Image (cartoon, rainbow, N blue to C red; front, side):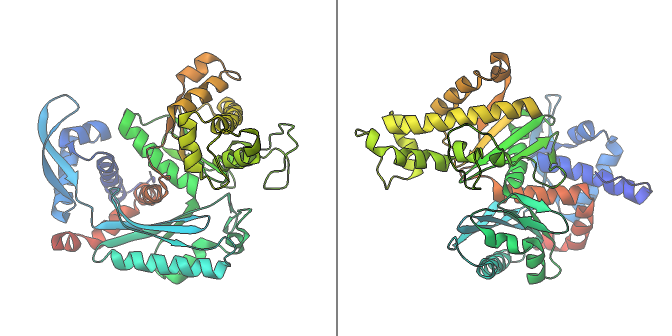
Length: 414
């Protein structure tokens, strides 16, 4: 959190510390706020009283405190503060209005052709964001937060480099959206980085841990990754840390990857490879139920049924994935690896993945590693985009300025 020296700044830090803790807990007692923040009880009481007067905190009945006793609980009342969250994907843009407490409403999707010019993509962005702002109604919009395909090269401008959507790389999308909506704060980051915020938040809630290293992987046509270390996203020098799909690993298969160079990792270990390989070998498996029109979802279902071709294609991808993950474990030694977006959600697949990894790593390392599937069906990009933006506002202390500008009048209306 931002360092300050003066009394007013220290008070703002204390308020943001309490706010951040309450954002992490649906309900919490005053005693636990003091216990977890290290603030004295008098300071906590003053802060809670101020928040109550602003209308952003209210009692929520009894809760069980950390010492096991029943006591009066408190909860944030911030449903009227929202983020317009956006995800730019291949062929579509998803939009949603997400409260700072994580509730997504007013979701919609606009589709476009893969060869759409950048002007058309920007027009859809403007149209969708405008609709979300209208849908927000009287709720106060904190910012616009955009998850975009990557890698995202950050020099003077944030430019998305996507091999099959070169139009995205022609402009700085963040700057263009800022021009569309003057005065509105706009955030933009790689979609896997955004979803990592959602995955880390879920991991904390499930395990109670606040420290550790997470490798979050989103699977689609490519493989994007985000690395979280003790709650802080690791971006690297140019913002491309975690882009494991572009690792150059030569398996000597004489195959050509999408970047016209041999051995690009996602050419062997992403979900689209399963369908590609299965269709290439249809004639060798006459008893398979896979057809030329089979979707990835159908192939996943046939894998669970034991279809010979589906099992071969998924197992082949699984071996390459294990190979790459094993190398990454030696590099960043994560506590948890999250597999999400379009990856097959199968316990059989997970068991096979760990079995393959034991060919490259010691059994003790693999057994100690927490490998899990994301709980988000198609990636937590919209929620993650919201969490990332709120995290910035809290860490920079700007959230208190926003709240004081918008409360209590807005809350009293609700």
